[in-house]
Image: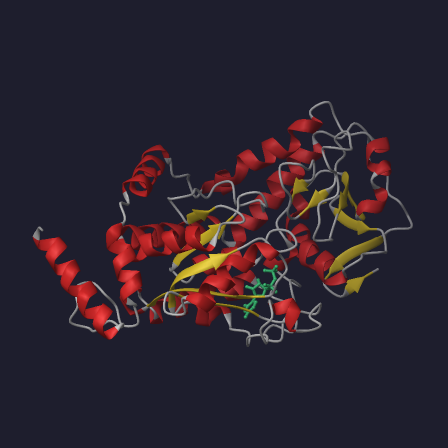
Length: 402
Ligand code: UDP
């Protein structure tokens, strides 16, 4: 037995006797169980380390100029419309969202908007760039769910905040960058105001530098998708490794909706920063949670790669976050958590790269810039000259429509 093997043997033996970790033990943090330490040292991490090495070698960082980081998404989303967008195409998806017009640098919208705060969160950005926009007309879907399935439709242009590769929808930056977003008891007006979250979370991350963070996985959220179940169940079995629990949402009726346990108290996003490993999952569509987690400078475990927002494509697995396959089993999640605990330098580096990416490429100006590039590229595809619909209301400033 070599030196390392001997130390591990002693560590595991002492833990087995006491079934807990003491500060003197070799690389075991307080709270680790004997089983966790045994598992950690009995594994060969080469497979994962190779993935990190390969991802890092092929990653080309993008420039912070003109939101170029995200420009491939616009190209990909608009590619199905390369033959042009006709008025007939827009009319055929009229019922899938709210119709907008930009005419002579003024913004108009049909009166109806299914979720006024969501329309308003989007209008905030469009009003700022009106001077740069040519005349155009578009349909904006404010539901969570994308609208134009590739399985049943020809390409039809509907703007949605999130989609999978099975949809033709054109992604736009979610309203929650400014307003709306899920309203939970901690954020009764909705999660919105990304600018404020950037400040508050970056500040909080300084209070919780890597070395001070609790070496546990953490998740709080409602059961908007059962893909989250494995994590919650793993936490119930291994509370020293992971603290993950379901909270209530508006759909909650009984403990069955929180996987047969009383709902946990909601936890502010700032308080997520105390933990070293943070989990993101899809909900109904992509979860707004993801962008916030990176700002804690903790290591993000991003589960599933199907559901996207516009900024996801520029972020790379093993470079900015730990990818977890959707519907991962408890054992698969546990393995990745143990990997992170055992390979701390890699974990810290990926966390930092995730934090740097979001702070450099998902600023409010990047969101505005994306809107501008998206709408300008979209307008070039229109095969008709938009004419003002006099039934539409003019959108001037938040709360002042005429
Ligand atoms: N959230 C939070 N603290 C909690 C629970 C939720 O900050 O204790 C935030 C979370 O980050 C997410 C939003 O509230 O952005 C809604 O979370 P939920 O899990 O209910 O739904 P999701 O949108 O993720 O499907």
